[in-house]
Each structure stands twice: as C-alpha cells, then as structure tokens.
Length: 112
Image 1 (cartoon, helix red, strand yellow):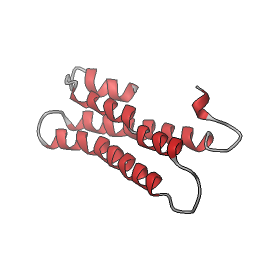
Image 2 (image 1 turned 135 degrees about the vertical axis):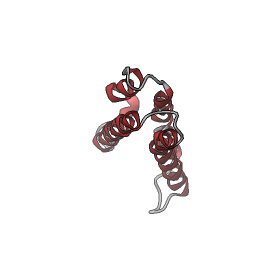
Image 3 (image 1 turned 90 degrees about the vertical axis):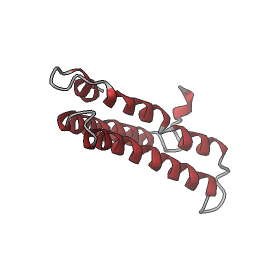
C-alpha cells in the first residue's frame, strides 16, 4: 500500500488515479472465497471453482492493466505506473501467500 500511496501523493506525480487499484485488491479474493464456501469437494473438476478462478484472474489482470492504460493516455506519469505495478506484485503476492498458508485442512481462515 505504501507504493500505491507514493504513486499518488508524490509531488512529481500528484494524481490520485492509481489509487483505484485498491478497489481491485478488495474484490479479487471474493469469487474464490464464495466458491470455496459453496463447493462440495466431490470430483476432480469443479465448475464453480473454475469460474471463480477465471473471475479472480480477470480482476487481477485488470488491476495490472489499469495503470498501464492510464499511463498510455497521459493521465498519470510512467513513474506512478511503475510504482503501482510494483505495489500490485507485493499485494497479490501477499494474498497468494495467505491463501496458500491457510489452505490446509487443520487451519481455517474463515474463523476471523
């Protein structure tokens, strides 16, 4: 989040448009969490989980594409775009680590 705020608040960039990727951060785990809640776990292929992964990947790709599109159209500068993309990598790496850590059967992340 520090990189996203720096991309918005530094005097050389001075535009809060990159902060819209925070919306993608909040909605990206929702399809997967809903699919895990309603999946029955029987069988090797679950269409509900595959659709949730597809939607999640669409949200993740959109959060990487938004700063690039904003930089191509001169709304934000390329330095702010690079800071936002680096922040995306850090945030999604953290989310991936969270889901991989708490995905085992003995721990349950829904207890929070």
